[in-house]
Length: 149
Image 1 (cartoon, rainbow, N blue to C red):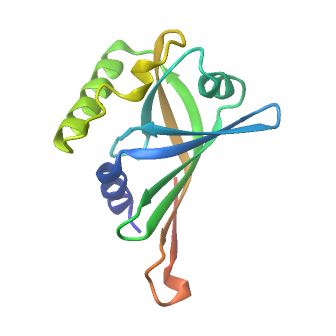
Image 2 (image 1 turned 180 degrees about the horizontal axis):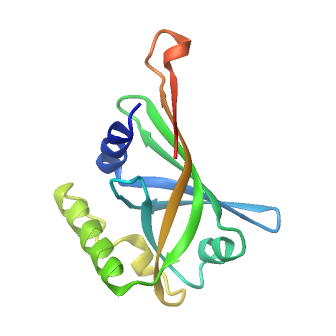
């Protein structure tokens, strides 16, 4: 799989599960996201959520994106960091709202807006490893492909 194919896959889905860990306690959270052409994943959370607190103490995260119809998944390992640049924040919020509008989703604003857990923050995940799986492939050697970032 090429980086462009990975970008196209991620761009088409926009819902993922994020895994974090703090003090040997894992946490999995469903989230809306947008992706940049360099395969960085961005999402919105609030600064008093468990997810954010986990990221602050341990920035190593994992993301899984699933295409149920095609029986494909993408796993991403990466490092999460808070986005503080105002221009980037506005750009990410605009991208998220446009992505949701194009899909005619009924969940905009995102569910995080219904949680009162501090101020809104945007997190960027810089991928270090990406693995794509296409479980409809007949040859086991063709199921997995990896992208080193």
